[in-house]
Length: 581
Figure (cartoon, rainbow, N blue to C red):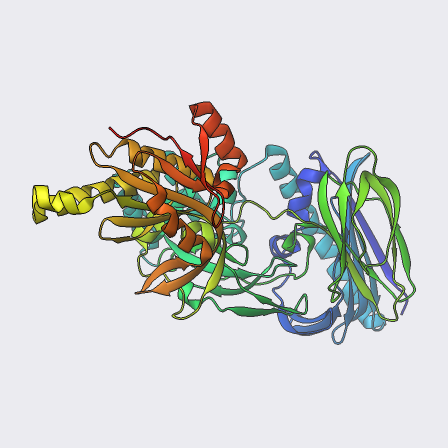
């Protein structure tokens, strides 16, 4: 049969860059356009085998990886194993001059009867696609924070009452009513695609709110029964969720990504992200897949191309400044590109076999060559990870999380890297004399009050007290500056009691001990060991802490001198030193 060709063009009022995140989210676009849900049957190399049912007919096909060039075009090729089609190619293009979206389809029916069916289906699809494009264009123009569910939202029996009870509980606990209103509206009206995987930092940006305040609201909402926690294990290459668990204890140490054909070790700093979804007793969410592999599934990839053996393709993407990585699926080697405003290469030939770092212009001419004997999938991806992920390393270092979910911990005997952590130790000077002078009861109450004050300052700065042992305490932070500020506050509020404080930053390992999440490793050991170097009027820290740019700026603003006190085993410095009173 001869190939059928259909092209639709729609004028758009929004900029292509603003419309791209919506139309390139092919999973959402197909659902909103009335395309039936699909079922994944398996994957062989980079080909996915998929199936859907339309008009009572089961249709199966093999799908190549999507090709795209952000934010200008994307498309896919499907070879059908059953149903009325033999093959179909789809290409979507966005342009500013003229401002339009063009959607093209090349379809090869199996026979003349199938041709009639395909023509009718394409005609109906065009009308639905037009409605979706117009709706998305309006959303992109308005810069709407989120997209409402187009079909009616399904609440469970009594779900709206449970939502209202949880809302009142959170208001009574002091939650921001503005933020809470936005969260409740999202649960009541938000699209299934928005609410089945809610990222608190993403919504902080959408709502123009503080990140930590938004994260803490989501955590408190989960405790109140409004939301549920989801721990997602992310592939380091495609950055897609490979596994999900409702408990941190369900996190596995090793995961396989079928899409990237790699096994990877899980760490809390990059591999595990905390997301949320409405409580199943409030809102029903039947999340189905309508398309896989679209550009928005991997938004950090700005260019993806399928190149046949011996093939060659020239592209001219528009790139923001920063670092990128060019690689080929299934190949461990890669080449780093540094995109710069001036002085970069304008033409570059790439084959996916790696090489030294290159400086490239913001609109380079890229020549992709497949010199191998097999089809290659070549990608250009931004190296910077999104800062909208609330990682497990960050969340578990928050006092509010440890207070609200004290039983959340890793599987026993499963140590996982927590990335770089800043560890703070405190020790009350000469606590034995307190017991002699005040008696056991009063001395214990005094030390308990000191620890409570320390916890307050640690929580204010976004850290968490991990444990207290007698008159000693250990806390962790994600950033050195927050630990230094908390230490200064704690030492300034001790009154007559002197408080030794030591801070060190470096890699740490998270593990469950005594049913609680704890941290171990050389960083923790060194921070504990140097605590004795403090005289109780100062803070001792390692050079890795004071060399942090935020810490340096803060010390300068506060007029605090840095004095080297030891160089073994690393350089130790003294902050805020005062003579004994």
